[in-house]
Length: 152
Ligand SMILES: [Fe+2]
Image (cartoon, rainbow, N blue to C red; front, side):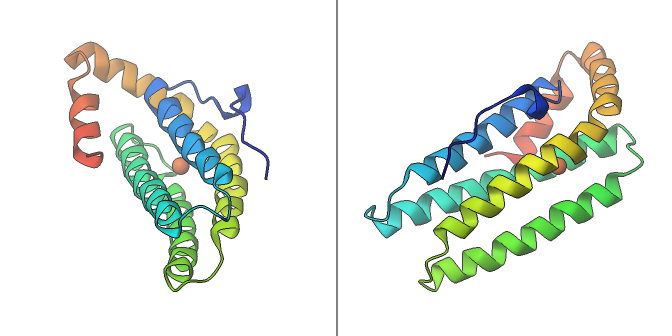
């Protein structure tokens, strides 16, 4: 499988979100690099970390959309949920010993790139505006504490 390369279509213009998307892509690329002869525990560790980080990212994104009063928050949440249930199923299969590492990579790759380029781009303008107002008011405290709430 090919590595994912960061490109302008993926950039939504909100630094904190772009940074998280880049981190997720880095995780996926690391997973792509893992060959079959890697120890299974190493792959399991990476998949766990990747899924965990993605969930934190979703929760963070949803908090931003909520704070900005984004009108399609509910729809966006349903999209995150649909993805979560798919990846959970694959993760369970992986834990049971099935060889689904590649399917996990593929799902992440196709779903995530589409999701960023379409759904995330849609909320970007309104969230970006709201965020700059908040940041001026409290010099970044809201962002910091919201990151602290979802990422450990
Ligand atoms: Fe999203």
